[in-house]
Length: 168
Image (tube, rainbow, N blue to C red):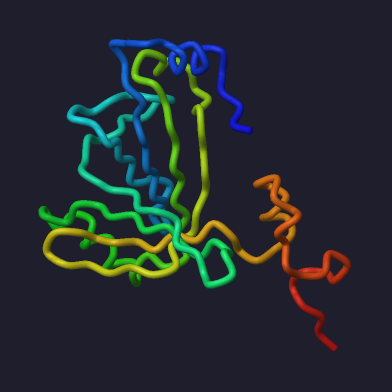
């Protein structure tokens, strides 16, 4: 079950509100302390001490394999200005980069804890003149990754085998 803050539960339960739920995307830039911080909104916002730039992006549906196992989530970020493509070209497609998705409410931007937060890894990238499409994977194949998502029952490996391999 999704755990929302008290403010989040109240906003969710209202019949009408002046505020909106905002989707934030934070793309870690390799070898840098800075991140690309975007908000799916028509104006920039300030949340958690950072300015989040209004930008057009779309989050697709979770893709599953033939056994129902989640594989990836497509994230399309507008590439009309070629801003994102510059990062993609400079950092080898940004493969392996961390992408964090967060949901916050516009009336409660003073709350530094997001209502929802998911961390993904960029698996692959495709760019054209309109979109930079990142294939995001949530699972790195470890038991700890499943535990972080309270989903141990779907772990497909053997928990007693140590991670990282054994070298002789």
